[in-house]
Length: 444
Image (cartoon, rainbow, N blue to C red; front, side, top):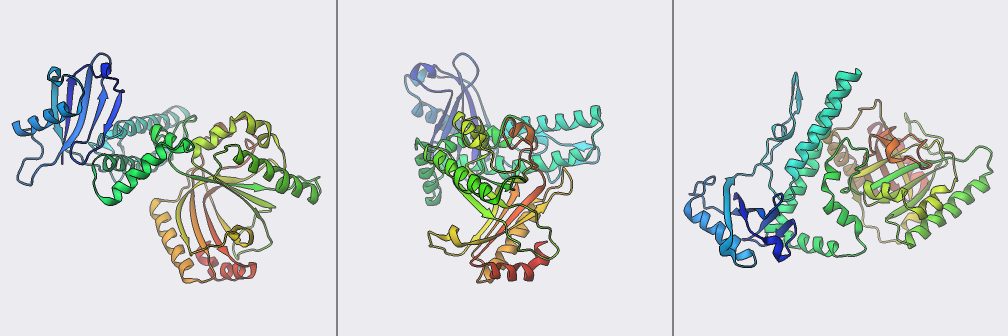
């Protein structure tokens, strides 16, 4: 596949075209975007070349194909198109194994040595946000005496962004435009179905604000791409009776949450888990009464919900437990589940939660560890007939949680204590106790 960029002059704005236009077709796909002021535009497209052709050159036949394609796609008198430049380039999406080594620091195209496919402009955006993160880190190290370990954070965070977001998102964008494979056709149909669903606002945010997903330093831009599950400890206020506490939490607050969802809250799942005296050898059990598990479409929607006047006046103002809460916002890494068709599943299941302590501010599990952990624990769950479900989440809490939780009752909580959470579901407390006792060495 030879990618070609074409700069041209044409009054597309007079024909009602937007600043960015995506043409979907297995052969004549392209992107046509506005270039600054005036009538200057750019088309990016691809030409399939046979194995005997030089893939990085533009011969007369290829140039004609490109011009014919543009003339076919544009409205009006296309004989008036004025071509300014036409250049081929080969797409290769690669990522350096390390962004920091010795006295050398990589950023932008030097770090993800890429001519990224042009669909979405994510290559340039990712590079700019690399520089933003690196700038913050160097300022703190050089001017504030911070540890050079911040460069390790930069290295891990920006490599993860490219590998987990930029690369797969831009690849999916390209396949959506040009692929005619059945599996990609199905994904394309689902994409546009969701895009046109007036009730699926989170999906529109995901597609419309991709740069929110790519930043690792902003205090005001929060990820729009990953579903998040929020674990919140719930502990009784000391001078409250147990009856009052249970009523405020299990009846009043749960009722507010249910009503909010009926009125359009984007909350996807709401679970209250009661803590028990069940313990696991060599593990510490926190003295919480309950754990609330809330699942939202993404961090952006979660944060936006805090600003909603209805939430602030009702559930956001309702005090039902101590406010020195602990927990984390997470994104799912692995899920294993046996076939469960019981609609009352959540009413009888016993869930064992394993919280992984963070030893330092920059303590994070690697991608390799998370993949290996998810695979090994899923294998254990599959082999044990008593395990109904296994889930592994990694911490996804914004680094500046003060900004995220500002002016909410969660601002006094501790939200960076844990770097991962695991869940195992069972049908009885005794079965859960036996499993934890048997596997405690691999779980700790």
